[in-house]
Image (cartoon, rainbow, N blue to C red; front, side, top):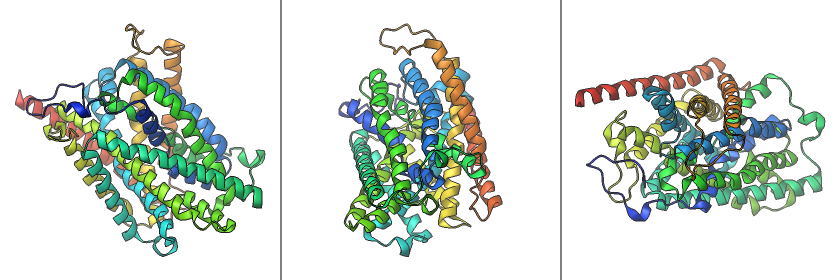
Length: 476
């Protein structure tokens, strides 16, 4: 339930039993799910052992500065809407709206990319991976089905939706433990399938490695997600920084140890970025004679991906909800479900648009090509709003006055250094996200799709903003 904004007169009253539904334990699991994804473990493993130090560097250059900035801004501006509200306060209505709009829209191609990954891993439940691995119909059907399920769960409100988040986080961590265990056993019995040493872990400046950096930076985002739910978290000024601190080691273990486990069990050149985790577990389990492990792990990975879809559908819907209250988007987006108190119009609308992205990404390419285009578009459009997030931290910095406001060690210097490092990482990732994967057969089409989808996102945001302004002027 959204708690802190004044709702228009025709909106339903707040529903007390849904207010502040998320406790600290919910926030920790929320961050574990929001801050990690098996997609990026597979992608990193496909890049080779140099991904291991890249994870650490990416965490230092993206996760740490983003976490510091988000904790600071959330403590001083705990309004629901997160980065939309921060950019609006710092730079005005249009930058604020475009920040929220691009972030919201970045999730639209992310949902099908995530659900394509879910579908690829779900194939291992019944062992039909070879039969359907190249079937666009199967991947489209699974994506649409996942969108519908996650949307319906969120319409029932955060009191119900948080359980999908929690289950998703628990299954992700359990799946990681299985992956790590099977990687260690395979390494002990057969030796590492991929040579992991100082030479192979040394990052190179080849074309493929440079492009991979944008994915690493993007994978370390997620701390900003809980800021959208500020009105629904118990004591957000304390719960958000504590939740981040507790979740960070688990996120790092999923990425670093998960990637190392894949590399130990499968040669990096053979890792499929769209199903690498289950590919590893299935391959190693077969060699070890543990045939019953693969279906169980596949269920865990599938459920964790569905949990991620539910989390991001619920979190991202708060942006058009707040924009609807501000009248930059149609007023319907600012309405809550009369029974469940969820932003149902925003939820349904983004699910419909995400479904369109499923078909746009698939058109004119293979399943693997569609997946790469969706990932690149997601990375590019997601990174754009972070330019405003880091800049907002500098613009909005004030010396803490209230006693309940969290004080960042180092004060202004820490905030500025974090923001500058974050801006550098974000800008480099934006540039690199446009470059297509070397294996893409139609590179010009891939670049055109990524730039075209991004231009569509930004251009439509400007159009929606000025349409809303004209609507406000007419109404007054």
